[in-house]
Image (cartoon, rainbow, N blue to C red; front, side):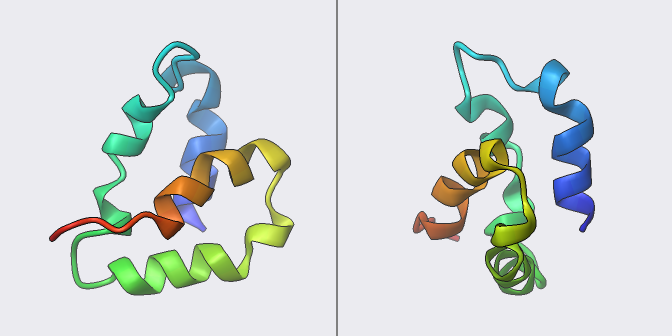
Length: 68
């Protein structure tokens, strides 16, 4: 999955330990657009295959309610 791959590659450069929500704010694909539901469902279905740090990163995004 491209979102997971990008976050993995950019982990050290984009995730600021002092502001972990910075990158999350930019992941509109999880809540907007024609494929948002499909992308979220795909991530939820494959969570078990992700490293533990990604669970902590993605969980709030996958289960948060956002307005469109």
